[in-house]
Amino acid sequence: MKICMLFEGSYPHITGGVSTWAQMLVKNISGHKFILYTIGADSKLRSKFKYDLPSNVLSVREVFFDEIIKGKGVYGRRYRLSGSTRKSLTELVAGKDIDWEPIFYMVKNRKINNSLDFFMSIDFFDIIREAYSERFSTVPFTDFFWTIRSMLLP
Image (cartoon, rainbow, N blue to C red; front, side, top):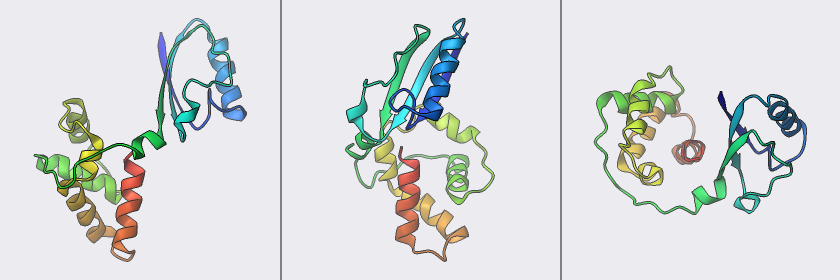
């Protein structure tokens, strides 16, 4: 069996509690194969592991926040989002119950090829504005916009 594990800011780049637990778990379940997805802050840590990975680790896929910030995007693009996709994205931003199917469909069918383009699009701005108007109009809009964008972008 293949098992995927997701680690943010820990194993295998950083030593400590969660990382030690993860190393012991992977090592002691030697009858299974592991794929590790890691999320880190600084790409200087790429492939610099604090642990010797057990032989049952098939791969480590690394994503770093500083690389996302360096990305290039195009401002002002329009996407052909269905009404249900737009509604689900607005519910996500507004913190409501979400119908995930339209979002999964959008991602699975690559309706958006460059996430940074989407986060710089008119559609994203409209979704943020609608969620803001519905539930968060007591906070400054610019604070709301940049907070949501920075939470979703990674």
